[in-house]
Length: 150
Ligand SMILES: *[C@@H]1O[C@H](CO)[C@@H](O)[C@H](O)[C@H]1NC(C)=O
Ligand SMILES: [Ca+2]
Ligand SMILES: [Ca+2]
Image 1 (cartoon, rainbow, N blue to C red):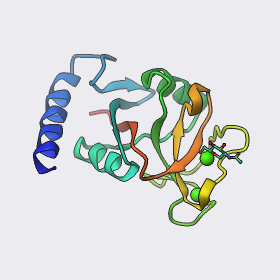
Image 2: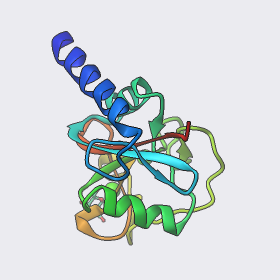
Image 3: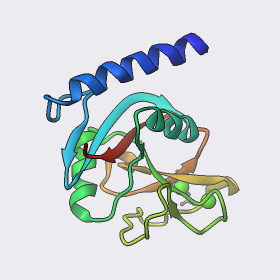
Image 4: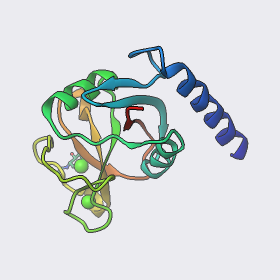
């Protein structure tokens, strides 16, 4: 497990170094709308995904408008993908991981439904569609990180 983490971190550092020149190549940071984003295809739990984003100097991605939503949808190849949106602190109160104000939502019809009483983390691209779903945070999903532009 530790070895795996080291490998992931090394891969991340390599990614960071390459990120400077590459624009939107897979595995590199991609500037958009004043921030940069990276899609990580390796499925992880929501908490692990956030830790990984932090190890890259960022957080799980937050979404404040339609354009960013569409951009991240493309970046993630329309796979079920964690974003930094959760109601784990208080069920029904959805908060962005960086505490920014919630000004945009894109829930699928009937979501968030807190199915089974413990769906507290949000994905984009539910069933490939252009909408969000709440899921069990322990589920392993690809994820998208964001960070400030340097
Ligand atoms: C609740 O959401 C899950 C996906 O998280 C979905 O599979 C399920 O069909 C939904 N249940 C209802 C009753 O809408
Ligand atoms: Ca919930
Ligand atoms: Ca749900």
